[in-house]
Amino acid sequence: MKKLTAMVDLKQEQGVFLLSRNAMAIALSSAIRSLGGFVGVYLPLYFVQIGGNPLTLGFLTSVASVFQFLALCVGGFLADYHGRKKVIVLAIVYGAFLTASYALVQDWRVFGLLIVLAAVGAVSSPAIHATVADSIQPKQRTTGIATIQVFSTLPAVISPSIGGWLIQQYGLESGFRIACVYAAVFTFVSAITAFVLLKETLRSQAHANPGLNFRESFMTRINPSRLMLSRSLKVLVFSYALVVFANGAVASYYVLFASNVVGLSAFDWGAIVSMQFLLTSVLKFPGGWLSDKLGKKRVMIASLLMTAPMILVFTLSQTLAHVVASALLLVAAGIYYAPAHEALQADLTPASMRGRITAFWDMSSAAATALGALAGGFAFQMLGPAVPFYIFAVAELGAAILLIGLVKEPRIKED
Image (tube, rainbow, N blue to C red; front, side):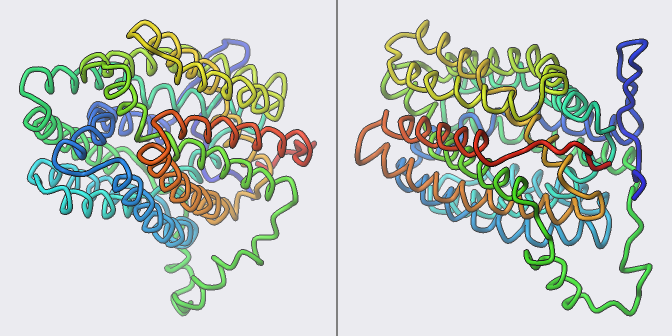
């Protein structure tokens, strides 16, 4: 199947990327949305402040992942059946509404319900990933994905520090609620940007086949047995699920560890996260180029093997300087994995099935996040604040072993 669109065209003789309208739309919309990324950074602190606890947070994150699983199941079908643009824009608007709702809630139980409902916004993930994968030349896939990711998240370099400043100025509760209002505005603007600039890249099969039964088509298309995954693709998805499990076990507990164990302020942590985003922006593009040159599998394995010991260094932190050093080393070790994985998955997946394969990938990730969040929340509260990070290290090493033994890069890459 021919490419539906061309988002990134690498001019090797000039050494630069020329981004198409759709590429710029996705990158610009995501960049605007990332200006409000400070909400996620401080959400665990706020949740505990209003009466929740780490174990409850882990449980709610797990339930949210189940909702995300269901949303992704539907999203993969919609991406291949109804097209991409509508799903992407509506999901962003939904996200703006949920973020604004955070500012109105002071009861931890209602706030927890909003955390769960926010997971429905993941319905657009397959459409976004499928559009990106369809639109980048196979030989430069990792580099192209890394480039779009860098442009999309560049404003996130400053957003955590803004959130930390708001909390420092107005207190944790008032500062967080003000931050939510700002984030909702940025998210709504990003929805307008996507609506105006994005062009649909897939003709709706519902329009092409008006007699097609929605339910039968949906059940047929999401049936895993019809996806005909190769062994390498199956193992790749499973190894990624292990990595997601690892991150799910620690995602909500970095800030709690830094605050409760090391004694850092919200502004300290915001500055650290800003430095992590800056380092990510600096390293991701050359990392993508290196992956295309040396091989995606090799780069992924190296990233996992370096990340495992770095997380243990983080648990030994006792001062601000220790946390800064370990947090930056952790990013430097792990930043190369995700673009290489997404590119290798695209290499192994026919274009006509990318929406469903991406949904299957995301669904397995949602299930892994649910398990990881439960494990991390229980470990943090019942066994000790460093234990979730030990779980992370073991899972990362397991994913590396699977890649080494069972995944092969294809000689002929899918367009």
